[in-house]
Length: 277
Image (cartoon, rainbow, N blue to C red):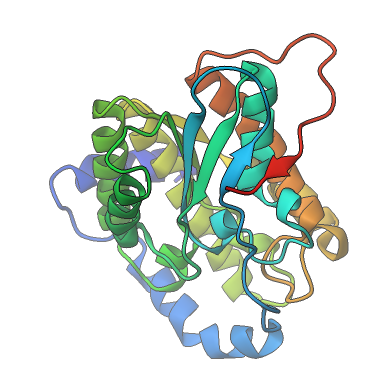
């Protein structure tokens, strides 16, 4: 069965709370996880604090929130401006000619079930004011923690629908391709690739159906990460490096601009510097 058909079945059964698909694969993933963890290094340090105002210009700042897991938090990046949150914020500011007020509320280890709490934190961060843009990166921990894909997809759809309903433009960077993590042995790596790509495809469907803008990072960037693991992954060989995050940001920024109905000004090359709030 193709990835697209598996993804469609997940979305269809998620609406009615169906049973999991591919449970045997999830069991294998769990059984070999200890070996994988021994081969994958420990991440160094914590994600950078990147909350602040980016860009210059007149007008009320565009309120942007970054939600999700360690990828959204930027764990593994060498500098704050290499994180996806800052890359997108700077790009949006340059295109809009207005500053962007960024709050990165992503949490290392987060699963889709943790997104509602992050949305609540965003409401508190912006004192109840509507966020103009929410960028979400989520899914990898759902796969590694054996969350039923139907449950994960349903939870994502609910979050995206609620944000869109409140007037927030939503971009979802769908689950990355876990088959690109070289230290993970086969057949675990092959199982991870199948499960993560299927989840990503299902996330893409439910995001679009809920009014958001999906970006399938696994399909777009999986081959690049697999071909250049030493360049695209950080020292722990699991989280992206600055190069990897920059490629993610390059794929997510056009979707963010589309969601906000913005275009990049002709000849616009350099993004602006950050001014911490």
